[in-house]
Amino acid sequence: MNRILVIGATGQIGVELVPVLREMCGADNVVAAEHAERLPDDIRTAGPFTSVDVTDYGQVEAALREFKVDAVFHLASVLSALAETRREQAYRVNFNGLYNVLEASLANGVKKVIVPSSIAAFGPESPRDSTPNDTVQRPTTIYGISKVLGELMGNYYQAKLGLDVRGVRLPGIVSWKAEPTAGTTDYAVEIFHGAIEQGHYTSYLKPDTYLPMMYMPDAIRALTMVAEADSNRLLHHADFNVNSMSFTPAQLADAIKAKMPDFTIGYDIDPMRQDIADSWPNSLDDSAARAEWDWRPRYNLDTMVDDMLKNLQARLRKVGTGPGGNETRRAAGS
Ligand code: SER
Image (cartoon, rainbow, N blue to C red; front, side):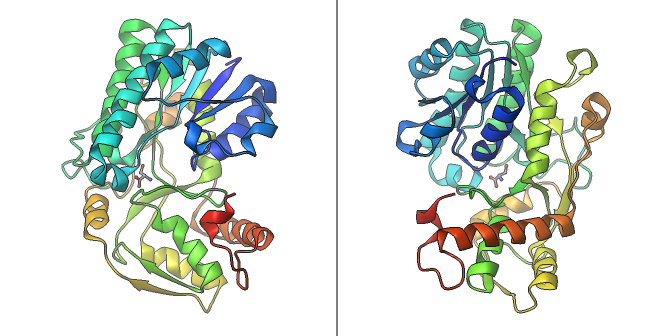
């Protein structure tokens, strides 16, 4: 990877992946790309940036040509809960956007495309515990269907057309720099904001909803490791399970309570997101990723909660949204 385009650079993963790639490959070699409406001022100072609307083939192609890109991280996606209510937008971004990125990459000399998949690529008919890497998928959400498309298209472009497409099935991702936008696993980020700002959080998932989760540093490692994996060792390409930890809202609340004894949790269930969560696995068997590119997670629930509280407290104090602050966290940005 000599010159990388990161599409979706200001999303939950993008804001953390771009600096890591700039550290690895040199700041000038990593171009942050985002939809023009979401391109914040601070992205303009740290390295090359451009605006790209993935639903417009011409814009994707123009960015690949202008920056002579040889690798793409395609992170732009409408997450699970939002995709259920905005099917048309989700179809344009998640389906057409993916096609535009693959085709434009093929036509413009890109060698490698990284497309994250998700636990959402599984469905109620998949084995629930330690879900195997290769098993029945049949997801029941628009987002999940788009992720299966990404996996199958990625494997097709790799096998038939020689474009090296790779991806990992990410679980819910917990992070403190930026919040996710309308996913089903967002509670696991919101709960930390609730704990620090109000001492309380109301969960939209039931207390015993068990889901696979991962702390952001491990997710970034999974993406960079799969991108750099030795192709001679790969039997899979765009569809690797990666596993880290699994917990329920009640278990996460207990882990937070152990550090913040006054924290309380309540429940007000959102049937749509509960339904989605109930269709996803409890945990993933990631032996293929371990065997083919030495994947190992580093964080567990306790070390993640520790690190999250420390970093989010410091960040919110800095922007004035912690206890006593009066800005909203969304207005404050990261
Ligand atoms: N975090 C995502 C979501 O909840 C799953 O990939 O939509």
